[in-house]
Length: 272
Image (tube, rainbow, N blue to C red; front, top):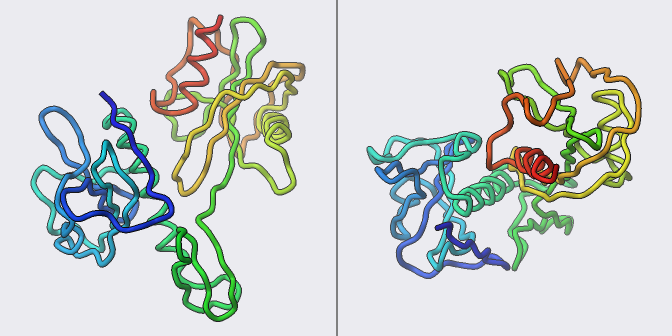
């Protein structure tokens, strides 16, 4: 049964004792491989110092057990049952709630690593009390971990066909249209623009489906469906190498099951 993750906000200190640990080395998180599957590492509060990390960040609790994140310079002290995975490699390998913690940890660690100096005056920043933010003691500028919204949209014809796209390097996998929201643009405007730019068609009936944090490095994917309204498929060759209509009973390989794209596609098909 999946566990429940409760975020600790405002950030605070965890109680002493056993905790789930998420040590990251570059863009990989270290997890434990057991006979029953892949799990988060469980250890006492001193693990980060034993691994050579100077700071452990308390994220919240997973079924009442504290969750801690840290960043490692080296991985020489790993246990035999521990293994480093890229976050994408953990899709379908770990429980959903544990993956949620890992994506949160990745974004907080990325923020701490890449925002040590004020973007206004270049002075070293300090932690802004009660938040994950940073405050500059020199000029007073305060900043917070960014979230970059992006849309993900499934185009359908109102019947039993969907328009899916393919990028170089995706093997046989096809997926939805995706793109970042521009300044001054609504989410719905972004859906229409990205679709027209990438596959050259127009849509209507834009319908919200759901959202998913996407820590590469700090995106929030906002999912939609949209009905084809006209135009001939014409791909942007700088973004895609193919886009095609598929019957819902003859689909290509789809994104991983834990992804929002997979949910949007299979959820829409289930309503046919």
